[in-house]
Amino acid sequence: MSRIRAVFWDIGGVLLTNGWDHKERALLYERFDIDKGPVEERHETPNDLWEKGKITVWEYLDRVIFFEPRNFTPQEFFAAMQQVSQVLNPGNFDILRGLAAQKSYKLVMVNNESAELNDYRIETFGMDKLFDFFVCSAYVGLRKPSREMFETALRLTQIAPQEVAFVDDRAGNCESAASLGINAIHFKSPEQFGQRLRELGMNFELETVNA
Image 1 (cartoon, helix red, strand yellow):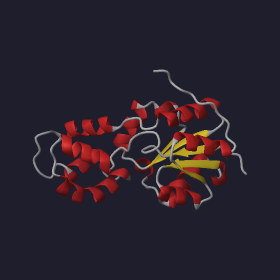
Image 2 (spheres, rainbow, N blue to C red):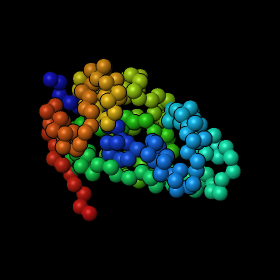
Image 3 (cartoon, rainbow, N blue to C red):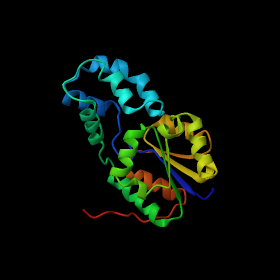
């Protein structure tokens, strides 16, 4: 078994709530009294472009939310989109901080997210202090589960796939990574994730931030 030199991390569903998935959208549709049907019909294509960095958040909102008059502004709605993001698994942050403290592994964000929400999440949750690289879909113009997304992350880190562990809550993303020889971990719980890392030969102590 090759020594693990890097961990590729999904973010939404692993560390944080998703940035703009169906649950987050539903929360804001209710909060802003938006009829779900018409906006969901418009969502998919602009969202793909937005998460690949082809359009801005304001273009996305113009196409999906503000195609008709609203009693709130795009700025108010985007602020609410940001505030939806919350820590989902504190135990995974303990693992992440423990690995970062070792300074023995490259820690790489590999996620599908818009640039504006990703930038907000990195700053708000202090992930710029924990990760070495940020391979976000909006930064590289690719989205998981494409093999090209993982190939790009491998090229940027210059680490062989068998020396990489990857964690994601979506089976399809794990399957794509595994097809390249990456040690993919389909996330179920912080305990399962930590145990799997140790089975791969990684040694680390959990780093918990006191409240």
